[in-house]
Image (cartoon, rainbow, N blue to C red; front, side, top):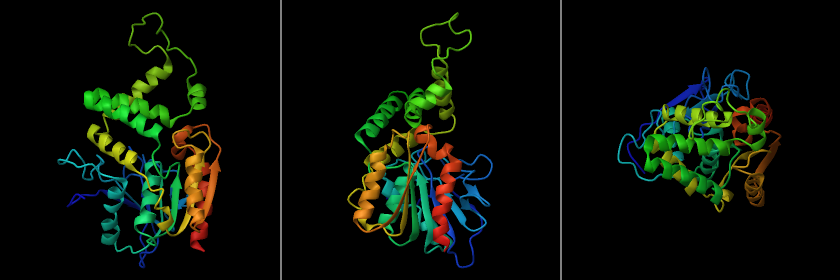
Length: 311
C-alpha cells in the first residue's frame, strides 16, 4: 500500500451530530468525486428528495486512489500495481477522519459496485447496506481481453492509444440496440463525396472518434492502465460470505459487459451464506451505461431499498 495518500473528496448534505447518516458512493473507472450538483455524474440520483436523499443523508464520494482528479495516482509518483482492495482501503482513513464509525450504505456501479462489495468483505459491519449495481464478483475473461487491447494501444502510443482504448471501452458500455437506434448505418452528410480511407464515413465512426478524443483531454493514460488492471485482478467470489449487512444487487437487461449470470452469481453466493439480499432487474436498452442513464428506474429501486434502512 502507498503512503501517504492524498484523497480528494466531496460531500453532499450534512453529517448529523451522531455522524450516523453517511453514505459512501464509489465511482466507476473514469468517474470522480463530483457525484452531484451541476455536472455531477449521478446528479439525478443524489440530492434533496432524490434516491440518495441529501435532506436525510450525508453523501460522500472520493476520487479513487490511482485516479487523475486530485487523488494520488501514477502521474504523481512511481506507482505500483494496485487492486480494488487497495482503492477501498485508501478511503477508510477518510471515514475515520470524518468520525464516521458506521455508514448507512456504500454504493456504486460497475467498478464502483466492485468496491462496494469489497468494502462489505474487508470491513464487515461498517456499512448497514451495500448497493452493487451493474457489476460482478470477478472480471470475466472477455472483460480482461477488452481491457488488455486498450492497454496495449496506450503503451504503444499514450495519447492516440488512450483515445482508441476509450473507443473500445465505449462500445462495451452500449448495446447493439442503442447503437442501432441512435446511428444505424447513417452516413455523414457530404462524406461520400470526399471520402478518404481513414475518414469517418458512418456517423457511428465519427461519434466514437469524438468520444475518444474528448477523453484524452480529461483523463490520464497511466490512470487508465492502472485502474483497468485493478478491475482485471478483482475476484471476490470466495470471500462474499464474509460480507455483512443488507444487500441490493441491480442488473440491467441489455448489459452485456456484466451479463445477468454475473449478477445472479453474487446473489446466489450471498444467499447461500445466509445474507439478506434484494435483487432487481431493470429493463433497459442502454447497455452497461444504463447505471448512468436510467436514473428514474434505478432511483425507484434505490429509494425503496433505503426506505428499509431508515425504519
